[in-house]
Length: 243
Ligand code: G3P
Ligand code: MG
Image 1: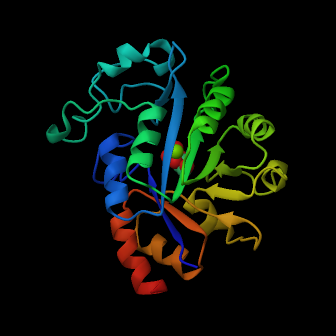
Image 2: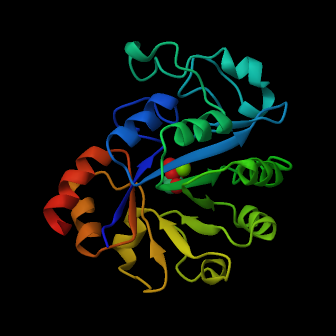
């Protein structure tokens, strides 16, 4: 089986992250999966962005949770990356999912609930209710740095796949990572390389695998997937190693 190449926040290396152009590019580059991050606006809309605040990637300032969808839609989320992306807007979860449906995407859709810093009230119920209404041909994997969010999601959708995210400093034996809920591990690649620990029954998909060396490391070991900012480049390296 080929190691899946999962586009981190879309093709983040060459498009403004977590925007429709980044997701379109990932599909164009043949990514097997798409990873993205979801938050909630003041008026309860599901918003696609990495940070809790809009400061780094948009023309605005302040927390997503303090703004309405209309306020968020006025911001420019493209020009921080390049002038040619001026006018790119922050997408909602619905806009991203509808794009994937339109493009007939059949890969893996990894939705990360960004609930480790702000526990948005009811976000798990909203995401579940929304996703369950959609007729999709892609495989959904929910992940979070906040274990409680996965517990809530699992209670609502026991048959969906869940991934634990962990950072480089995460202690090796944390009980949750062996729980029944979590089938996949999405660790920092530096964690993987430091521990050199793999369980055969766990699907390992490290992030963010951007250097050729890290890509080769994962492809040689036939990990289930890698999460990368450069799906196009990863495809060339995978071809050389796995055929
Ligand atoms: O889901 C993998 C990766 O996205 C986790 O880290 O900070 O890029 O969301 P971050
Ligand atoms: Mg993420």
